[in-house]
Amino acid sequence: MTEQKKTGFLGRLRDGLRKTRGQFTDRMKQVFALHGRIDADIYEALEALLIEADLGVETALELVADMRRVSAERKIEEAQALYDVLRDELVQVLEPGNHALTWTVPDCPK
Image (cartoon, rainbow, N blue to C red; front, top):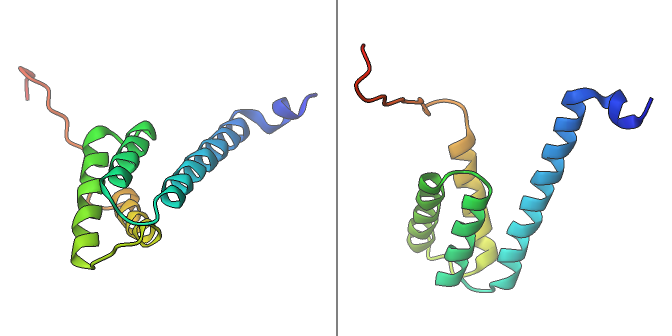
């Protein structure tokens, strides 16, 4: 039996997600490494990366807007410090709790 069959579906899924997470993390680190100081380009790069990561356009835009606000409030100028802000914002978004799903279906009986 091959190793892939031994791991089963969930094992393969876990391995695939681990690989995807690693690629996302590597790309995120590259964005921060390429920008020493915070500028418009870093926000654009982060926005694109978050959208590509399937967080959704609205969520990505909100995250970037929050990062801009927090970095201005805290007077953060270095890109590496912005990484911590992004991490904190992502934790809030992904944290279970007050993220109720709402579905809008037009002309649907109630």
